[in-house]
Amino acid sequence: MSRRNVWLKFDEWELICNELSDQKYHSFKLNSHELKEWKETTKRRKEVWNLSEEPKCFQRVGIYPEVEYVRSARALNILCREDWREQDIYNVMRTPHSFIGFIINYCDDVNMDTTFDEWEEIRKNMRNAIDATDQRYWSYSDLISLYTNSNKKSIMNLYIINDVLTDYTSGMIVIAAESKEQCRELFVEEFSDEYHADEFDRFAKFTVIEGVNHPAGIVDYVYGGG
Image (cartoon, rainbow, N blue to C red; front, side, top):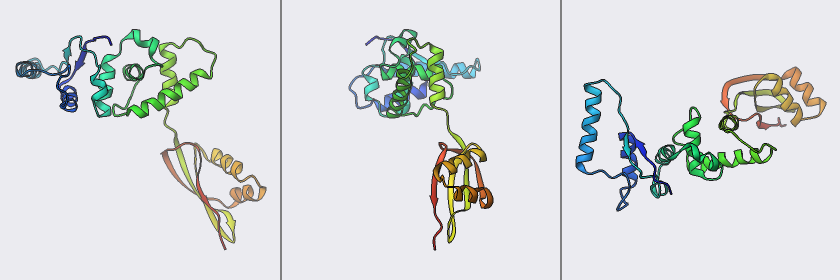
């Protein structure tokens, strides 16, 4: 594995060291003098020059094997972020740590607490999308767009509908949809007979909850009963 410079802020360094505390040796250990010097430099930058913290460079240490030993998603993601280099684009869909590093460095609003398993699910979905096309070369922008489109939140309205699915008494149904029109389409698709479609159009009473993170579709329903 290549030995690359890793830049860490103090709180990032502290998190990683805490998670590696049971390791006899790791690349991010500092002696008391180095730690004192770092703290003093940070304090001086803030108080004298009014500058923000400058990350410390751990020269030519790389992230292996430490990335295999950290426990939290945040520590994993920090290390992958620092390991990324442009030449890794050739392995970005093949190796999980390169994939994570690429996404964190090039995509906006990435959750730094995304777990390894969640990353693997995202990578699998993107690979499936790539395999389904004839496109042979995927540029940076192509991969960023694919990630963005693959991970769009499904912000829907939640329609709670009463006085439908009647059988002596009224039933109810809950549908997630972008609009009332789509809501009707989903209802008619699920309950295809003319009676229920007419019932929806004439008698349905709606309660709408906006801005729900849920895929479009039937959430739940219950028929009326005798």
